[in-house]
Image (cartoon, rainbow, N blue to C red; front, side):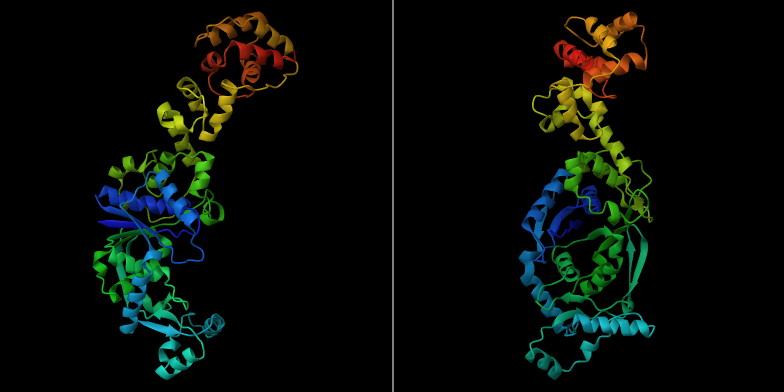
Length: 444
C-alpha cells in the first residue's frame, strides 16, 4: 500500500489540506503502507520555496512524517515523455483557439440549449492547417481525447461512483508554453510511484473519472488504484468552509495556540459518529477506519476543537510544554495555571501575574476592606492552607462572605475576575507581592 499527499506550494496549508494529509497518513500507517509527500510545483510562477518549507514544517508540527519526498519540478522531462506517448497514440491533440474564441463557443452552445462542452474542432484540423497555424506563430495547447464511456469505481467513502466522460470537455493537459497541468502530472506520478490509494476531497470526483481514463491511456491498470473522497467541510453555520475558515492556515492555528493533538484528534473524527479525542497521529492510527466517514458534509466546529484543546492543555505534563513556556516558568506554576487555559498563548499573562509585576486596579469603595485584609495577611511560609486561613480571618473581621469577600481579593491579587484557584496561586505570588497589590488596590 502506498499513499501520497500532494499539495501545491503556492500558499500555506489550511484545515482542508490538513484533513486530507491526515487521512492519507493514517490510512497508510494503519495498514503498514508508505506515505509520500509530493509537491505539485509545476506552476513555476506561483510556487515558492518558502511555501514548500512551510508545508513541511506544518506537517511535522501535526506529527506527520513521510517515507519519500518528491517535487514535480524535478520530473518535467518525464512529463514531456509521457505527453509524447499520448500524442503518438492520438489521445493528445493540439488546439489553437484563443480564450475569447472558446468563450464565444461556450456561449453559443448555451444559447442553443446544449451543454457548453468543447466541440473538438481542433481534431478536424488537417496537417496543412496545423502547419500553417504554427508558421503564423501560434503555439498549441494540448487536450486529452476522453473516451466515450462511463468510468465507475467503488469509493472507500462514497460507495459506487461513476463519471460519464462524454459529458465532460476534453481536458487541457499541457499549456501552450509546454508546462504540464495537475490533471496530467498527477496521473504520471501515481503510475511511476506505484500509488495504490488516493484519498482526497469530494470536489475531485469528476477529476477521478478523467484521471482514470488518462491512467489507462498511459498503460496503467486502473484496477490497482483505490479512491476515497472525503465530503467537503462546512463552517459552524453550515455554510461553505472557504467563506470563513477555508483560508485559516495551520500556521495561523499554531500562532493562536491550538495544540497539534487537538487538531489531529478533531480532524480524525470529523465526519464520523465517533466522539473526537485528542491525540497525535501515531496514537490515532491503530483505530483509523475510513469506512466510518459519513457521506454527508462535515461541519468544522471551532468550539468543539477548542474543547479538545482545553483538554490537551489541562492534562499536559510540564515536561511536554516546558520549551514553549515563558523563561523562568516552573512545574508548580504550570500545574497551577494549566486548568485555566483554552490556548497556550493565554499562559503568558498568568506568568506575569504570578511571577512578574502587575498593577492591579484601584477598587473604589473597597479601601477599608482591603486594608483590613492586608492587616490579616499571615506571615510566610505559605502553603495550600494559607488562603482558607486568611480569608477566614478576613471574614471574621469584616463580616463579609461569598462574592463580596472573594471577588475584591481576587481582583487585587490578580487583576482578573476569574482564574485559577487562589489557594494554589497565593503561595506562588508570595507575601511581598500580595501585600503590595492589596495596598495599590486600596488606593494607599
